[in-house]
Length: 193
Ligand SMILES: [Zn+2]
Image (cartoon, rainbow, N blue to C red; front, top):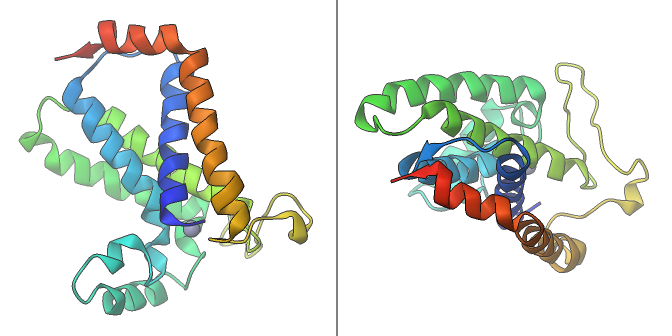
């Protein structure tokens, strides 16, 4: 899947968790930083390819991306597994603890969850692509859905652009409409300014 589909899937997953779970009270800064972390989590696994958004936007990024990609075992390897998600989880936890003194009003626990929700949504979305995902590394098998390869999505091609991406937008609109009361209650009663 492309970066923009992953970001949309990440925010969709975050929205679903926030609105389905019992509402939590949080500061506005927690909500904003959580959305940012969620979007980064949504594309983080693709740091294993030199064409990833992060590397494209950095000077000499493609070169660094190639080295990082090789170090990660190539595209769709360790960063696309539960083991990789756990490693990211630990690193992000310590990074957030390190950053907490400069953003004391931010609940880093929520930010961490938002990042992880983005990351897991990435693995789920890649699971429906032709290549599949090595969820269970170090067991070297790629899992994919549906099992028949021809029914799965090719990254960047028309099924992704014309069905998956617009489908996620429709899902978001439906979800906001069907959980409108909860959404309003969250904004009015649970966001602390
Ligand atoms: Zn990926």
